[in-house]
Image (tube, rainbow, N blue to C red; front, side):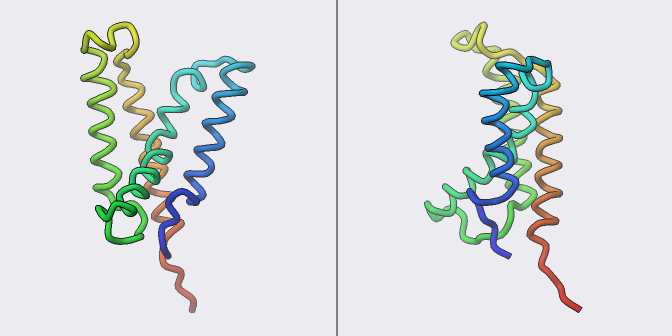
Length: 128
């Protein structure tokens, strides 16, 4: 089964969750999870399909298979380091970016859920 990129069900759920969080939950139902961690949790399943779609269109990705382990792990590690280690220590982002290990935990949990979903969703269907 071909990976659906921007029409992948998990991507669409994350897009809807982001919109609901941005314009409903954060405004009317302020709580720690929606304010601080929901976007981190949906980060990987939201951005990986966009990244892979752009890579496919530019010829950097030559297949339409679901995201492979390294295609999830490399951005997870890179984004964790950039957003939670590097940027909070730069003078340009002083007061704007804050290091929080729980953000990395949320990125990782989101990546695990996404990997499990994509493995299940795009598993070849076998008929007996």
